[in-house]
Length: 193
Image 1 (tube, rainbow, N blue to C red):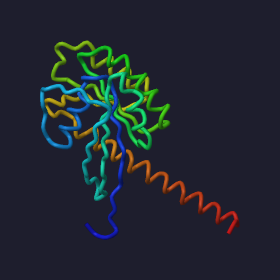
Image 2: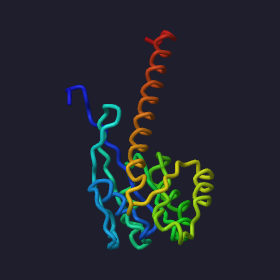
Image 3: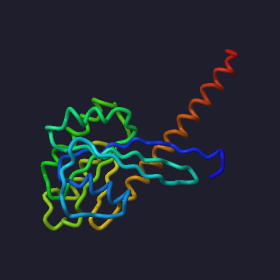
Image 4: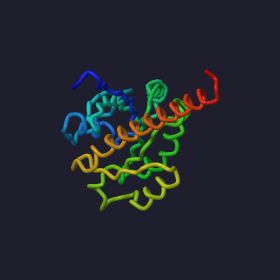
């Protein structure tokens, strides 16, 4: 790494009902393994991973929040400062699908509008689906969000989610820098300096 390189930190919160695969997703992504044993997250769990995209370094700080209502007061405080959000629901849990707008609103209430993606997880169980791919596609269009269809168990499309969020953050930052430079240029051109 040369001295001009620097690392960009992105706080990503992962929300959704319990047992949809949030913890398994970040374990798979950060540590490369999957476990069938379900262990309820109490409050919040935290993992981080460094990735490089187009020679830019990113540190993803992944906050895995509990999906049970009894932990709401605890977990919402961890939303603050989030720059991206992943809302996860499951093919075999229609309640998790119906709760997506509620989760989205909770995030908006705490941190405003941040880059948010939807994840339809457990595609390996699609034969027993209670949520169809068409339902998920329609919801993503309605909410104007990118949808990822994953199987954390089979490690399908998991990395794509985090790569997309880092690339989106990089693009947003570059556009803001460009707009800021243009504003300063106009300010100077108008004789303000």
